[in-house]
Image (cartoon, rainbow, N blue to C red):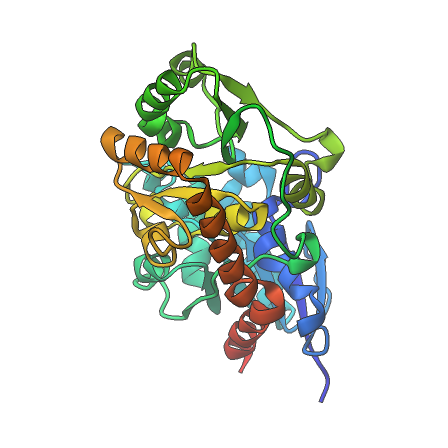
Amino acid sequence: MSRRRIHVVYEWGDDLRPHGSAYIRLIRPLSHPAVRGSLDVTFGRYYDGQPVDAVIVDRLWLPEIRRGHDAMSLARALVVEAHDSGARFIYALDDNLLEMHGPGASASPQAQVVDYWLCAADGVIVTTEPLRERLAPLNPRVVVVPNALDERLLPGAIRPGPAGERLVIGYMGTFTHDEDLLLIVPALREVCARHEGRVEVHLVGVVGRHDTLEALEGLPVRVVAPWPEEGEYPLFMVWLTHRLHWDIALAPLADTPFNACKSDLKHLDYSAMGAAGVYSDVPAYAETVRHGQTGWLAPNDTDAWVEALETLIAQPALRHEMARAAAGYLYGERVLSRCATTLVHAIEGFLG
C-alpha cells in the first residue's frame, strides 16, 4: 500500500523561516524517524497544487494574513486549490486565535480567516482539550494532539550548570507576555529586595512593551538572547538547553479566555533545561504539573508567588529533585520518540 502524501503549509515570518510553533507541532513530528514509514510529507511556504492526499495549513500561515492584507481572498484560494486538486484540507492551530485580541476580536480579518478555515476544514488538529471544546461548535472533526519535544534537539539528561555567584531566576517566551510578567513583578521586587545582591532575573523574549520595562526598573534584570543565526527553532532549542543555566524558571499566565486554551509547552521547555519551574495554577499547567514534584503551582497573587520563590531559593535539594522529576516526565511521556505517531493517527483518521 502506498504511503499517504501530505503537504504542510507552515506559518512563517518576514525572514522566510518557519515559526517555532510550526516546528514543534508539524515539521519536527512529521519528519521524525518514528513516522518516516507512515507518511510521505513535504513542507513549504505555499501549496502549488501538486497531487497530495491532504494539505495542512498552520495557524495564520502568511505574513499578509497576519497583517490583514487581502486575508480572506488568500484563505479562500488555498482551500479551493486544495479541494480542486482532490486533497483534504486540514487546519492545525495551538491557540484560540478567535479571541487572540480580546473582546471584539471576532471582527478582525485574522479571526475571520480562522473562522472560515475551521468551518471549511475536513479535520482540525489542536493541542489541548479546552481548545477542542472551544472550536467543536464550528467543526465536529477536531482532534487533540498534545505538544511534545523532539529529543534529537535535547541534551538527554539534566546538564548541571556552573555554580554562579547569584541564583538565577529566568522567564522565557515570545514577545507577547507583558501582561503575564506584570502579574509577578511585585513578587519579584519583594524577593529581590530580600536577597539583594544574591538573585538575578534573566528574560528571554517576553517583554514587548516599554511600560513593562519601566515596571522592571531597579530590579536585577538581564535580557538574554541568542545570536540571530540561533533564532530559528532547532538551534534555539540547542541554545536554550545547553547555554542557559537557570535555578528557577517562571511561567506566569493570566487567567483569560485566550490563555484557558493554551498548552503546557513551557513546562516541557523548562524540564528540558533542568530548571525547577514555578507555574500559574491555571488550566494550562494544572493538568500536567504535579505540584511540589515536577513543578510548583502558584495562584496568581503576589503572596503565592513570593512563597513559591522563597521556598525554592531556600531549598536547593527541592529544586534539584523537582528538576530531575520534571525531566523524567518529559523524557518518559512527552518526547516525539514516544508521541509522534499520535499526529500520524490523527491525520490518517481524517483521510480514512
